[in-house]
Amino acid sequence: MAKLSLEHIYKTYPNGFEAVKDFNLDIKDKEFIIFVGPSGCGKSTVLRMIAGLEDITSGTLTIGDTVCNDVEPKDRDIAMVFQNYALYPHMTVAENMGFALKIAHVDKATIDQKVHEAAKLLDIEHLLDRKPKALSGGQRQRVAMGRAIVRNPKVFLMDEPLSNLDAKLRVQMRVVISRLHQKLGTTFIYVTHDQTEAMTLGTRIVVLKEGVVQQIDTPQNLYNKPANLFVAGFIGSPQMNFLNAKVVLEADGVHVVLDNGINIKVDKKRETALMNGSYIGKNVIFGIRPEDIYDKTSFVEKHKDTQFTAHVDVYETLGAEVYLYFNIGDTKVTARVEPTTQARQGDTVKFALDLTNYHLFDKDTEVAI
Ligand code: ATP
Image (cartoon, helix red, strand yellow):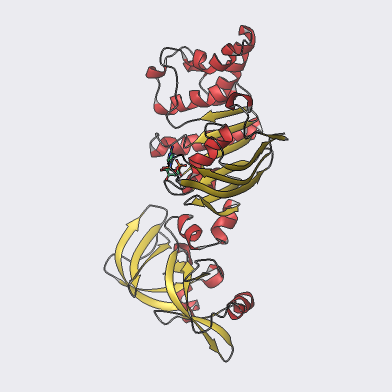
């Protein structure tokens, strides 16, 4: 069983820098876990501690049923794939892939069989006699993965494995990695700063900021129920719009009023949270995703209570969708609308909000209300 548990893990580097603070995570067998966050948030540090390439300052790392804090990397039954591939240039693809087995004195027939099985899985059988310099970046990355696969590890660790590839290849390799995970039925732990990779690959995602876990959840929940302003802004592209809003108590209950005058009566659950949190009369942050702002006439006419007009600064088409950029007060806002939109740069456009999925955050703590 390839379950892992990280309990109260801290990492302080020798120069005194605290890179990871109180990291807690239970990983189930066969999960695809993603560590995501901006550069320097500590993703690689956690991964390297799991691999045994970095000491754990305090806390407990358990792999299977064994506490592994002091277990040598080679004895952890883990394989790591790096972004720079780290292939031996003088060896062929087959030799690179079989090298770990060779030094473990596995017999040649078994090595050949495992190398061919892995090559087939990765669709690189035709490259087995080539040297790394005769391969493209995407092919090298497959070889690096093949080298990990032949060892049949309990856990795969991947540190930004696709970051050296161009955008198209990254999309292709994402699919390869997804299939690999399904076929191997092994636990994957994968580091990326790319939220699209995180959302498409992960069964669960750990969002990190400055060494602290912000939220651990499924891609769907991170998107729909972000725990705080950071997660709300980090997950989703274009990012969620944030507007200042005032909480007011009216005769029929609690409302939030946006800077452009839109007045929203909140649902019962939020009303209770706002009352209990003593938010009446205070400002909060209102969040709405670009796809929940509509310019389609039929929608706008039906949602008069959330209608507003704005001057479109920029019109950007991606083919299947269009982004409209405008200001509400001093705040820059993006709407993701249908490609059939008539709106263009310079137009004054009528919009309306879909309030099925809006978010509220505390202005000071930035925690979701
Ligand atoms: P990136 O996406 O840029 O790779 P990351 O989230 O993986 O970033 P880490 O490499 O884990 O970040 O680094 C976390 C923090 O620890 C960074 O601020 C980094 O500068 C610092 N750090 C990493 N290695 C050391 C070290 N050996 N000594 C001191 N500080 C370090």
